[in-house]
Length: 266
Image (cartoon, rainbow, N blue to C red; front, side, top):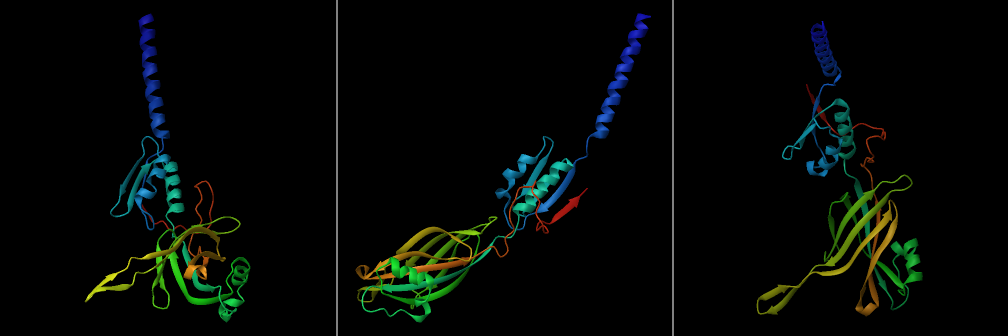
């Protein structure tokens, strides 16, 4: 009787184990696979973030050449990863800058150009600098992409080159633009012998890293000339964020359609 009881108990335990195993397999969610093509960023710019959302069974297979990313994981994890991609793979900010080169002079009378004499920035410079006259040498417009380098040639003889690298910062109260600026003068040809000319090296007039509000005008710097009696003043105004979408983490909601195309596979 004891043997029969033991056999019955073992059989019941085996049946119970298989029943639990079957229930576990039925309740376990099926794996989901998505193929995403990145439009604006590269794989290596986002993969380290995506891996943090994977389960042990999840996989991410990137293809750097095509920009495709294959994601396989449980549905809730795949959805989180897709949300991260939608937030990061967005159009970069488009920024517009107005550039002014103004020549300040300490000698003579005040003969400032009509174009700048009533400018609030110039009026403030008159209080801060010892220059009496301010004359507009050149004006230019630059369209730049967020965190990419742009340059423009300026001056009467196109002898000046301005290089800009902006970074757009979207904030709740006001938008900011961080700018790396470098103004240089191209080297001119110099006669060094009969029929022999050399190019003089480029001269860096000023470099500056500054932060400005979007829509604000700021004085970037002054490059002194003629022993300090004159100065080349660089003034920049900028406006950004024309196409930028604000980046937030996946648990935050953002209105608007995604720029991330997703093709589904089953």
